[in-house]
Image (cartoon, rainbow, N blue to C red; front, side, top):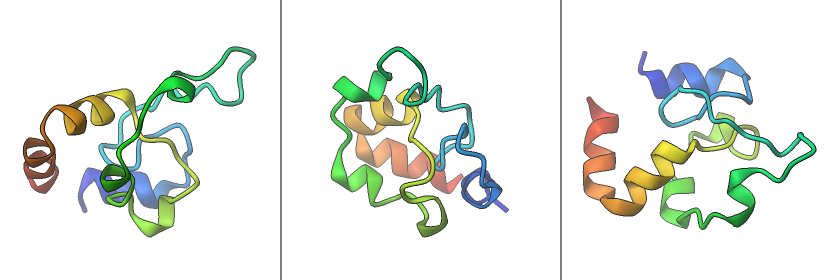
Length: 79
């Protein structure tokens, strides 16, 4: 099972559904979350497994890497 699948199936909203690392989501905190001012590419959100859609945030590292080079991001996910 890949990290992606473990994160997607874990039900843990603190984990990124793409890499399985902590997503540092602050949507439930008193301060604004980093993602409130971020642009998340639609093609990246499309990669989130169905089981995790609208349940867990993508982490900053995945957003940054995908934004810099989608091809490299997708290649790393397949490893």
